[in-house]
Amino acid sequence: MSGSRGGRKKKAHAEDEHPDERWMASYMDMITVLMCMFIVLYAMSTVDQDKYVALRNSLATGFGQTEVGAIDSASGTVVPVDQVTPEGDGYSVGDESDMAEAAASGEAETGEGTETSEALAKSELDDLTAIKAAIAANLEGSGLSADVQFATDARGLTVRLVGSETFFGTNSADLSGEATRVMNAIAPVLRTAQHDVSVEGHADQRSSTAPFATNWELSSARATQVLRDLVERGGMPVEHIQAVGFGSSRPLAAGGSAADLAANRRVDIVVLSNQSDDVSALLPELQKAAEGAGGAVTAGRNDVAAETAPIAEAPAEAPSDESADEPEKAHDDEGAQSGGH
Image 1 (spheres, rainbow, N blue to C red):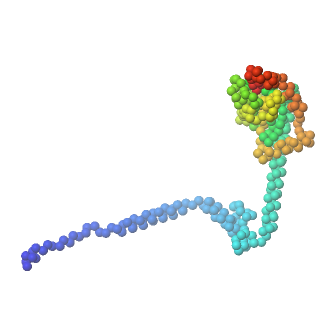
Image 2: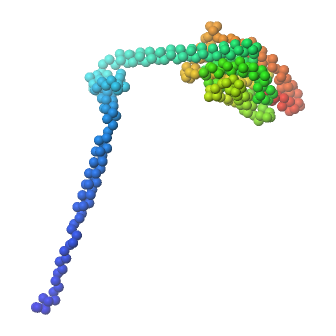
Image 3: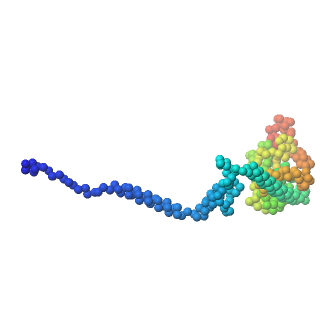
């Protein structure tokens, strides 16, 4: 028995040296949540007081509960609580009268806006007419009235230099002596007009010849020369002027006669309107009414001169007619036809 007792092994009772630490995970989660809560509380504690007050007043006014003088943008559209229908559709009484008053108010505002636009358009037309009269007087004093046309449209006042032979050499962008005298009459008025100016070159539909590859180059070069003259000699502010070349894309006359071609070879000096598009759109109608009442400025090129001047330039276009009658000579005369640009 003793042997059996001696052979029995003692049961090891090893003590666990590390206690259960699972509680620490929950504790760390709680600490993290507390930290986030305090961060949010801190962020909320820095609310912009002015913005908060503005929001509160706006909401109170929008729901019709409070009259706030500083923020009353919902005036006229807020439905008081006692006038809301059970279905929440809006006014329970006075719908028709309120709608009539609103419509009448809108019509009155529209009428006032139309009167204001018309008054601005009349003022702008008077300004452009004064510019036209000043230029026409200078041209008449120099005996150059027959070389310039005037037109008023929604863009403003157009001073039209028609017939390239008067202002430029054949297939050239250099200003002639007569063109310089015309610029001397125009530049002093434009310099002090307080309007932006667009100098726009145009050519007829025939192909250009050297040194200009296309009508785009030719029309742009002539517009640029007029611009340079207005700026360099005339003192026109550079920030109020631009040059554009339209080539043959905007003809005045659709035909191919000598008069039509001469009308399409031109440089337009456009005195742009200072008013908005809506106001400027009224200018042509007001101009027509002024002409009907005899109030339009007629100095410059009149209707008779406009019809006869291109015809006077017809001899320069004789090669075009002859080449049409003689097919064998058409190729040889092609350069002469293009030279009129």
